[in-house]
Amino acid sequence: MPGNRFNAFQNHGVGIGLRIPHYRHIFSRKPVVDWFEIISENFMIDAGRPLAVLDQILEQYRVVQHGVSMYFGSVTAPDPEHLRRLKTLVRRTGTPWISDHLCWGSVDGTYTHDLLPLPYTWEAVERTIERVRMVQDYLEIPVAVENVSSYAAFTASQMTEWEFLTEVVERADCGILLDVNNIYVSAMNHEFEPMDYVNAVPAHRVAQIHIAGHSKYEKYILDTHDHPVIDPVWHLYARAIARCGPTPTLLEWDDHIPSFDEVHAEAKKAERYLQRHAGELAGAAQ
Amino acid sequence: MNLQPMSLADLQREMAAAVMMPLTADEDMRAQAPDGRAMSEVAASFIAPNSRLTAFERLEIYNRQYWYRVMGALAEDFPALRTVLGRSRFEALSIAYLTAHPSRSFSLRNLGSELSAWLADNPHFTGRRHLLALDVARIEWAFVEAFDSAERTPLTLDQIATLDADSRLALQPHVQLICLNYPADDLVLALHDGEKRQASEAGVKHDDSPEAPARLPKLRRRPTWVAAHRVDLAVYYRRLQPEEFVTLTSIREGQPLAEAIQSGFADSRIPAARWPQLVREWFATWAELGWICAPDLDALIKT
Image (cartoon, one colour):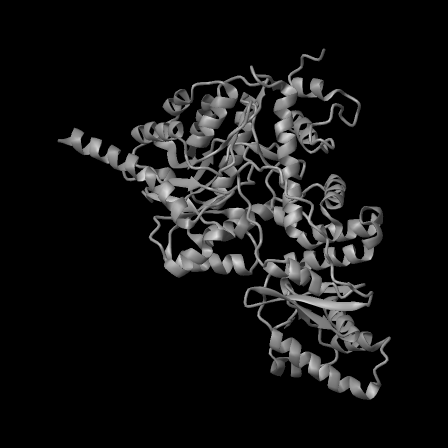
């Protein structure tokens, strides 16, 4: 399956997040990397070194944008300046799709800079699809919404998280950035079976997959992106690939960042699952 | 008991207020909301417990994450201020500042935009090093602005030479003019690493690094005028003469060229006979650094 309309029919392969500690290695060694994901907000500026670095990267690599502050579920409308800067960056990078989170994080113009979970209510569905549609129309490229890790659930919720996600993406007609690590983290924190989530996701809308590591505490798991991917998360990834087909995959590593080679090697473990799936497809075709 | 379901807007306001409420000294969520309600009841009014955590404990995770994230971001933008004040004083200052000025921007880049002005009004947070701390905060914010502010096409010296006394000019947006009580630019330079933080979606852990020893070089109080500016993507600090500083400030404020230069020399002790030569030298330097631009017509129309 060569991608879908939510990732502009691109099969990017396996990428990693573009992070400052790796700049020197990338520019001096020019390693072969399928693609880099950038955090949009780090480059939504007027000028200076970050944009110069980005332009250098764009000369050699494919880049996909991922945002952390669109807050599709916030009740207050997006800041027009935010949208304007985001669109300017979209034109600069030529990103084939853009992603941000199915969460909220700002209210009445004040920002928490966190990915706060939504209550899974019909009111939240309506609010969220309204904003996703508006952003998608404004940016004129496919938008994918990412499931977040969460540590709290709401008494008001009227459906499961995967039902909420499905309702939003079907009615907003957008893609999904399926974060299988976030599914695992939330499953442990909310005591549900993570595979139920992966099995319920509308596979034809999955534009991209995130994998990452996390930190385990006594009573909960925190999504810290500072460890290798654990086996149970790889199992979820394998199932997601089996359901969605080859999907652009990105390893997130944001804290205690090891060498470029170590991060890249961890990301490339995903290729085993992609190749196994391709082999199964070939076998079935014969 | 109110059984009316909370609207999404009310839930987000209630949760944001809880998440942004300062932690206790032990970094726990406070037991009481500012309006006197028990936080255990506030949390239970919209958050469900699980088999391991109460509603209060689940909300507390977000409360801690918020403070770790914003205080970490502020510390990264003001490393020299943190060193000058020490960790505990800087943290107390950060909590008070961020309570007074929570983020109003989608970008953490702008989190410290009001810190210098707030510090000037709240000297008790900086103690006996208040003026030095104020200087350091101003320099560090100037660094943030100079690092990624816009760069417009500068005027050449030949183009500047064609202007008359009534001409209005503009300064390069990344040029930041700061008036200091101490020559604190060297101190800040020694403490900066030249790279900026990047945002991420990951949860954050508490900064448990030890209190940094505030070993400072001896600084004598001396008015100092500095421009923070960008050359080849790096931020530099350039000391200015006071007359030069005032002239540049006047140009930025939109004064006609002749008035801007007159403002620069209004309180000067430099003999008038030397002024023309000085002005020629300034403009030559400014043109070489690309500091002088034509006024931004779009901005003028908007205002």
